[in-house]
Amino acid sequence: MCSLSAANARFCLDFFRELKKRKRNENIFFSPLSLSAAFGMVVLGARGSTLEQIEKVQLCIGKLKPTMKHLFSCLKCEDEGVHSQFQSLLAEVSEPGPGCCLTIANRLFGEITYPFFQQYLDSTKKFYRAELEPVNFKYTEEEVRDKINFWVENETKGKIKDLFAAGFIDPSTVLVLVNAIYFKGKWAVEFKKEDTKETYFHLNKNERRKVQMMFQEGYFNMAIIEELKTKVIELQYFNNELSMLILLPEDDSEDFTGLEQLECALTYEKLTEWTSSATMEPLKVKVYLPQFKMEESYVLNNMLQEMGVMNVFDWGKADLSGISMKDGLVVSKAIQKTILEVNEEGTEAGCSTGLLAMPLCCPVTCEFKADHPFLFFIRHNQTNAILFFGRCSSP
View 1 (cartoon, rainbow, N blue to C red):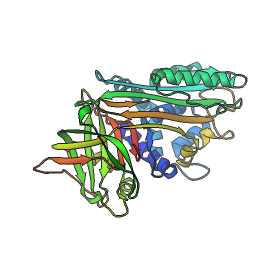
View 2: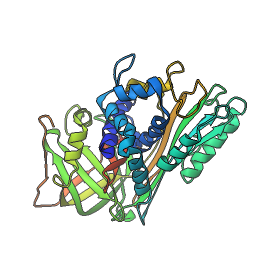
View 3: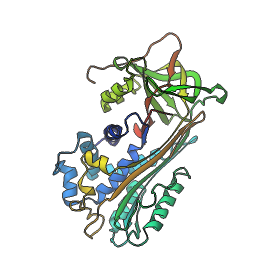
View 4: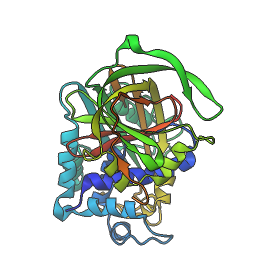
């Protein structure tokens, strides 16, 4: 049986590495789980050479990276019930209980002249809570654009508007894959607004900007990666089913490269070890965390192609005959847009080599001061599924 959460986490880090090539020293925020689920729907309809690419990991140019191989092998394991695992996982994380609201919505919009198999439509609805909606791209592309944008806005409680700009969809569009994510969670222990103060956030060695810095003192799960001089803290949401984990490198190096070193060293195995209950321990901590808001939008085609997923975007090679009997169906556009807001009440979001993680044992109160760039992710604790992953370079 494939580990879906582990595969999703590996994919998450691989995707982050591709993103940071394009967004050096910039904010990054995405949902690996939503993207994995959307491509799970594509796998359900992939056939022929496109499916063989996933199964055999052999491409005309290069090979799939190991993390992509692992993820797609899991998605393909229908005999082992992995699509059913996704069904259960999405149902579980979408119902986090009082104090949290999480909506993960996926949809495929397909050209109406393509006849879609009912079996495929039934499967996407059953396993992924999604439907493939036929639309008329050829003659009413702007109406379709408005339709998609309205759907996304509705699913994200009005947070994400105008996912597709004018002209993004044209009459040649055949299939559009859309992920919409909304999350709002209250902290288990809220930051008091009267403790929030204006102070500086250091963007790099030479630049800084004023931010609203929140503060609270209490007991939090915490650890330190000594070789990387990085602190790890867990901030739990109400009912403790979800948590935000923050990886904060020290900023005392002369060249201010702590975050870059952390990103280069980060692997699934290390992240799992650093954030495990065996490594982290409850300590009394003074926590300083800036209010921050992110709005990110990514066209995913090129990044996924560089990761090895090529045929599904290629007019001459894509075989999605499990979706439609008509030739020429490809995923022409893949896009994800996310919004994150962190404040005193909580979070609102519309994604071991030579190193050892050691508990940070200290007889006095520790300090966790996020006044410089850091990595973070939001985790569903029972399944260990990473719902969102990001880098805060500039609040």
